[in-house]
Length: 50
Image (tube, rainbow, N blue to C red; front, top):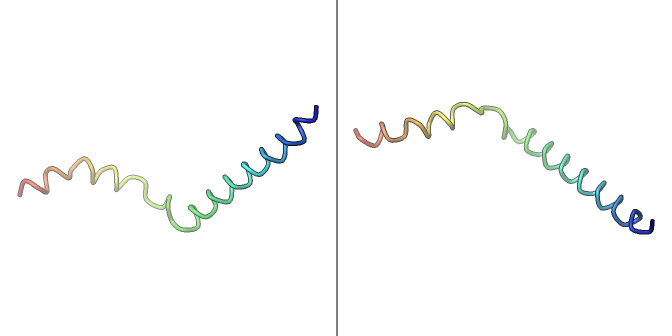
């Protein structure tokens, strides 16, 4: 039973850190354009052949 006094605060701290990192990334614009980088990787070889 004593282990829950250690695990519960650690789990809550982990969740709060994950939410804070997600909020920082979303505010910074990390998730604004998800399609263009993937397409750029697909067509990168075509540009280098020219």
